[in-house]
Length: 326
Image 1 (cartoon, one colour):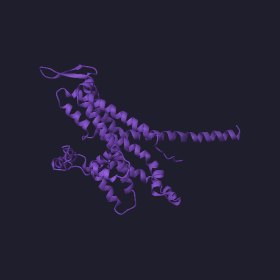
Image 2: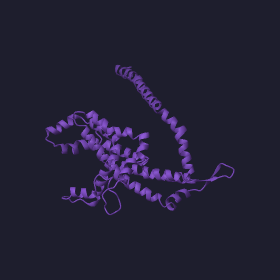
Image 3: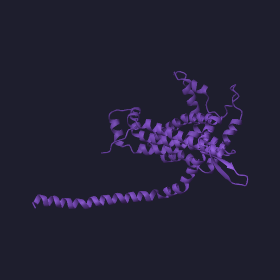
Image 4: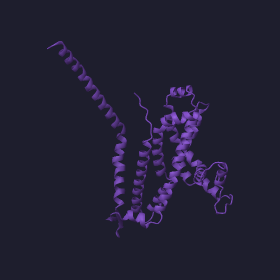
């Protein structure tokens, strides 16, 4: 055997154990990952999966209460779905109204959270305190505070108070601004009534927008802090303005977080207790034989939400910028 062949054989023997160690390390990491998610997997299989199966099953059956007690399931196919769509006079209307409201609320939440994240990312005194203040509503909107808020006690009081009579029979006491105020602000700009109505609605719903923007602000802050300061320094040396730096550097670099927050906001908005569709499905469940109809409504609503998330993720992912780290 020549010296060259011996060297190749020795090199092959040295590399073989390294490949085995690398594979073993990957397997250990995989086992650690499964061990980390094991409580969720067990809970999902033992608790949530049977509930999901029963919910899907009930949407295709009708419950017949027996005279001696108990009940039996009678298969009816897609009759519950047809009844929810074509017989119930309110479900489709509530669904369209809820989708319209969320179509206006979700962009407002994303814009506000990104705006506040950019401000809170600046170097200023008490920055940590301001970050905590804007995240407090997220903590308060859980548990008993959420049930208190769902009653809208303050909102009901303001609506019952006397406001400015506009001739429509509606009180303006609960409104921060009116469409007339926004029209005066944009008097010298050629802006349509649609934008005026959207701005007016966003300002009047600022309390709800702030409450639902805490998590998004934290995600945006994490994305902003991951941008290298050297990039901003090079922009300043080139004479770029703050406006140009935001649109040419900050916005493209933060675009993956915009996609994440968009998906999170859609899911959060579609599943919150204050959602009009969720309230309608819950009220339908309390009616006689309403549990099967509400199951059909819930699964139709679930499919609509999934389609909207897929459409938003598909459209936005085409414009997301991912930085290559070589």
